[in-house]
Amino acid sequence: QVQLVESGGGSVRPGGSLRLSCAASGMIFGPFTMGWYRQAPGKQRELVAIIYEGGNTKYADSVKGRFTISRDNAKIAVYLQMNSLKAEDTAVYYCNVRLNSDYWGQGTQVTVSS
Image (cartoon, rainbow, N blue to C red):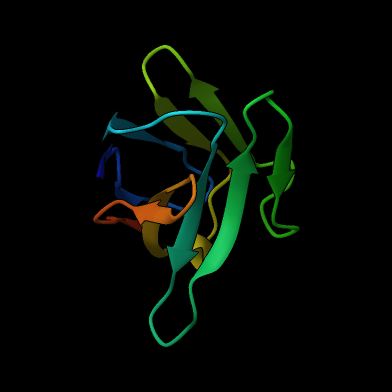
């Protein structure tokens, strides 16, 4: 089993910044991808950013240039630095680890509002 614990969500004004963290524990072996997804009310869960074992990254077009994903393999942790936040970034953000299956965190709320 794999457990994921997220932190760092909250409320911020447009243009502000937040940093999300996710720590993984459990039976994690072999190469694995870590990432962040989000789900806004009434919408499907969507990819925000993923980072591969070797450090390559992939971002949703809507967050390119504003968000930065990083990982710490020693701590088995993934981070999401979010800058220049917009109202449309409001969502519940979920941490993901992909091994032979997908594992998800409990989600953390990010609200961007003036």
